[in-house]
Length: 133
Image (cartoon, rainbow, N blue to C red; front, top):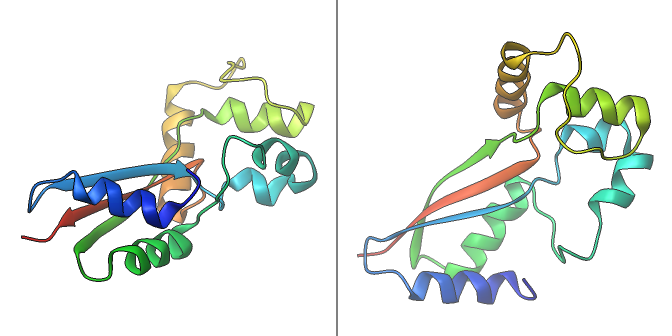
């Protein structure tokens, strides 16, 4: 997205009055940015994304772009990688995808994701909005 403000305006124009918009983007507040910034930042700051958002900057961009033409319903967090992914990043200092590790199961993944979602440290952040009537 070259211009997030323009993108939001155009997306909102496509909706009927009362329509809902969901925007998902990488979360600048990803836990790996804190744990191993020297290794994670070169991976994170790539050309795929020109803009990086946390909850505050995403809310600001939305409100600045739409200026009361839409209601910001919520900012939510979603973590899409398992606990093993974090451990592998810490061990190898490079991305390896969503690999599995012995001793790490779906229960630990759910606990890890739940913790990150409750603290806003997920890999993905999304915005839910509603177009004015």
